Image 1 (tube, rainbow, N blue to C red):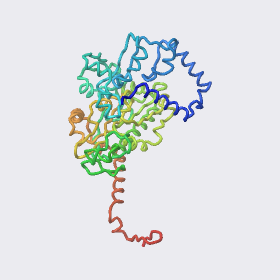
Image 2: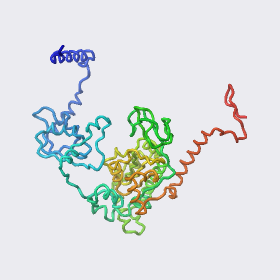
Image 3: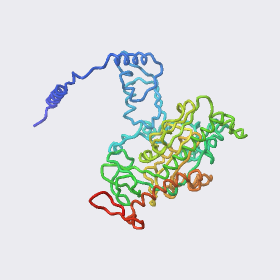
Image 4: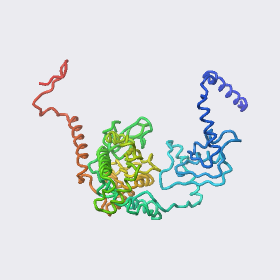
Length: 461
């Protein structure tokens, strides 16, 4: 028997009416008078604006749509970070303003694409941006060929590796105001350094949801995971099906926190000394005056590919996370700990990058994505310190290139040889020994007392 479309529609509408009646939707509170006034005020401002800054999704909101006779009509739209925007979201703009005369997409296809959690959607191309589609159709993007953010020592490798030397350093980053800044901020080795934290080891964190970066599809080569922080890592993905995996490295977390405190302390000394703290060095004097301009603060970012490492680093920074003084904008210090993916489009004066992975298999997980490394390596203005396990990362071709460049420039050093980091590294080693001792079966065998369990409290003889 055929199914009537009209009959089906009638049954659906009747079902919706019953749901509405059952939920008493008509009794839900309406917008308050204050909310209505605020909305109308916003509408009034938008309708009379010549330039509007908003997110792409906001283009479909009431303020920018509304009745056809009062909706905001844009003749030109500039979409920033367009390489991160899926085509479906850009359709909001095109559908809302079909009479656009100019659409400019600004983005970097060499950096991370949009975040799409569904693997099925990715397999069907949902994560493709309009930027990528236009490129695949033969449209050559216009290259913005000058970078004004990074000290040349930081930009050197990314400019060559990702942009084939077509991007050059701007005059501002090559001037005296950039030279000497890193040393004034306590980075005595200069604006760029790669530290080999060879004592570090990765530990796996299991999550029941999809909040980890890598899927849990089976036991790793190091054996099944316990599902708790402290499980030694391996090269594969591990754990329960349906969950996810993240990674942390306590040695790198301790070193990252120590470096942040070192920079914060140097900033405090610099502000206490004033702009004359150049030590007789003219370039340092210029750098100090730039740093100590009225109202200028210091921004520090600690970034890592893994959520578990963010969780490991954050408690070690204590009160620094809330900033010092009145905030970075008025002479204080701003410290942010984030994932690499969440840091795209941002920049800080100093960046500490913790790569986490440390295993005998050379498994680097999704850190092998060149777009992720490009984002991570290009966030810093004056100082970038990269923490990694060189023996692990070197087994990946991309990271081998990165390490080879640092080594050829004399910028790959051992963390163990840095006196300023000994305390941080030793504290983690001591904690690891304490944990190992607690797991030792004959912990009490050589002690002058004996432990005996009875029906009552624990007895020590």
